[in-house]
Image (cartoon, rainbow, N blue to C red; front, side, top):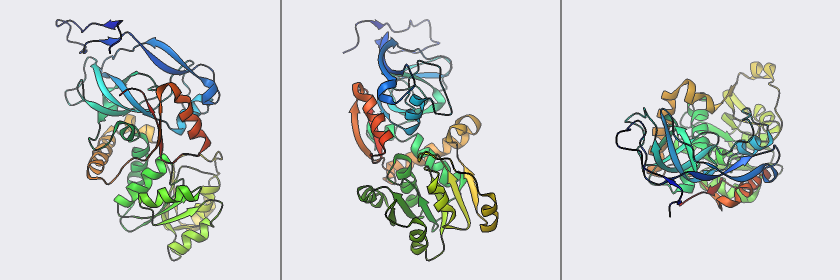
Length: 354
């Protein structure tokens, strides 16, 4: 039922902002009030429901996919450091509840089911630029669709834009059972690559194999360098997708193919490696950085291409986000704590509303 303290519909003679009836005046939002681990940093607060401004949409949030950057935001270790207090959460699935002025006719309309990305969406309602939301694939549930934006677009840009992955090439994916790693495995398979996944346990190995990895190596059990060379007949990995860094990156430099490409996506392992420039020269490979968050601002046209490709693949069953488990909104810190512990497979999703 709508909250009794609800706003009325905008008057017909004020068309600048289109609103449905009964958007509540207040909402619940998880906010970081002091930096630290998620369980200590987060507070469930009641705050005013935001209103969409010029070119923005208000989304009633259905599900939020937890991401490692959410953990870093809570700790104050992310490259973006919002002023306290702030809400974490960087991607969602929901429905458009109101439109701000100037939203283009090509953008989703009120009532449309959408996915999108922006820091601060771990709340019952969220305002996003209209350009940062897009129609959710009908084939995916809300928990599945919530994890489609960041992980899959990161993998898409890493493999297709930065590394120019080609059919038949060997693709090595670190953390292949994690959210972005599984996305890279699925997109690599969809592109016709031969995928080698690196995971942390036998249980995670089964998930990577199910996603399409031809060879799976277990970190700490298998010799990664020897395993890659054996699998590829001595050729090595043509493309490496690395969200881990540190020792994972160093191992990749020892099994990279001639003219191979290592895509640096992040440092979830906790160590930021130094770039071995001399080794890069001698072995004739490339190291490519990927900061997906720059593309919406710098090359939004490429974001549109990625969205179209992902929508098509989701509809055809070529990709399917793996959800480890779903927690209710009231227990959101548990999702981030589980993610930080590294024990999850695929995505942990926070259910906000049905």
